[in-house]
Image (cartoon, rainbow, N blue to C red; front, side):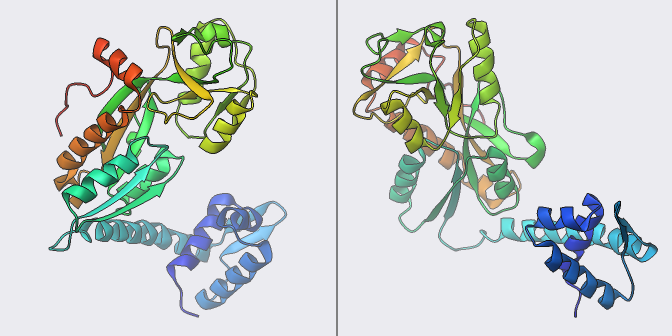
Length: 323
């Protein structure tokens, strides 16, 4: 058997977890299969890599040698793959735009605008609930751009080295059945929703903490919060089981209404991110401009909110920032 990078990852996983059983779980493998694979690796290398007993697995001297080399080789190979992926889009090929989005209200309109501007362009999309996952894919050269929302003045993790620019900022609204007692109000006080159950889409940002803090400032702790996808959120609100927080550009749904929260206790910032060392940096100014135009397009079905934006210039597309 020839030693491969995947075998080095197995050895590292066992050393990091201290257990073949835990390593198998982390790698998504059955424990007997991982044990058999370790035995094949040890036969190839000429001796045992771990002393194993009821307390776990500890590297032998040979194991320490293999681990020392693996911890150099694996990051080096990952770096090579990332750099190759970043450079793969260069050359005379038609422009390529690979987008990732987290519950983005403008992705469809952005794709439409880019396709109209550059008909030969190759455009692909990828959906995820995780800003960190999208940032990692952009940093690794597997996506060119990420569209992600963050609450308040927060920013995505800086650990992936992406450049982020603001597309827009909106107040967070509440989604209610049109039969709800508060549905007839233009604005709703958060405190008046203290007895409601809530539903929200998943995510890995700080929004749940910001929501809990806003409720605490309003004098209450939110009751049960369901977590499901967007369709599930709409279904629960339609059924009168819960109310939901939503983006201001939420597409109208028959039987439901969106209402502003008095005093704007929560804000949502839509950001566009890319890696500064990737070929995408050349098209970033155009994509950012298109993203802001796509956001403006999304306001068309919301004339009341558009009127509110005109009276509140601190929201919507704000003064452009440098790219």
